[in-house]
Image (cartoon, rainbow, N blue to C red; front, top):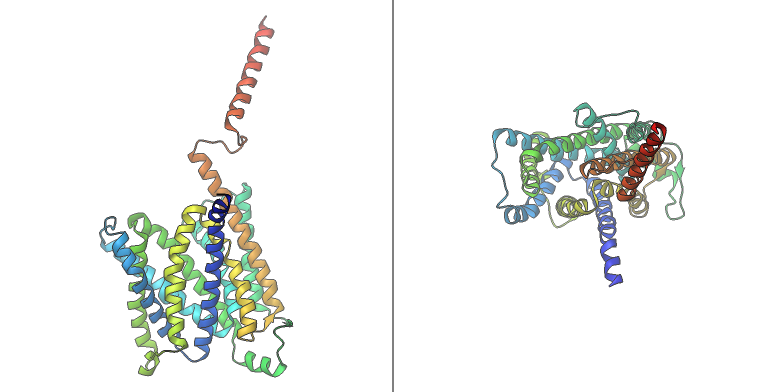
Length: 369
């Protein structure tokens, strides 16, 4: 019985760790496919086509009784969500990944919570009470995260050599000739900005269309149609659409099924049990896994500037998450009618307050007498 309860407590941890391995594999496989010459526009189309096909059956069956009607305003929100997520975010991210490296891209993606917080403040979805410690943590964490991103963008530094990833100087000169790190950094920042905008708009859309699986299916389907239109404009070679039983098909299917469909489902379940802070706290693990796998599989070089910037981004990330966690706890306490300043044992607090009132009354009676 104790073993079963221990397994139940460990399930959220195992699920999130497994998910980070899945994300790490997606970055490595996608990088290999892009290096082989696959168009990132075509990859986005196939990825979200796979995602739509994987999510749609669950949405049709599980939400057939709770699915709201689609009005024009909801349709426009779905249209914008498809444009921000599948089209802008994914295309910019894949180009940034192609110009830089999987480790660098994963480190930049850790800016998402801080950037989402800034946008939520600008949209008046978050209030900044600068005198509160939790708000100070979120503001300072955001500034540290931005500083880490700037450091990674502007400074590469020397190569850090590990026992398993020794590389020659000639391979380094060839690699650096093929990469535009500054341009890739800007594109990754823009991709993160688009993804943060996606989260803000998604929160608004879910208030009126409270069927998450159906909304995800519609967004992926709309993103597939929009990506097809963009690809027809940007890719003029019919051969770019060719995909066979190779790494290109694996990258598209893996990203669509694992990183979109399964990831949405697993994150939703864990989020219901442990909250969003628990889910996002595991994102730096993906960066570490990608760094190790990239150095093994892709002979990826790791630079001092990237490590220092990643440390700052992760530190800022956890500061923002800590502030958000404290804010959620305060909201839960307020909803339950609990005063945060009191101790955990509510009955003892009430009894102490009652004793103080009785003591004051007794003193007043003595004074009057």
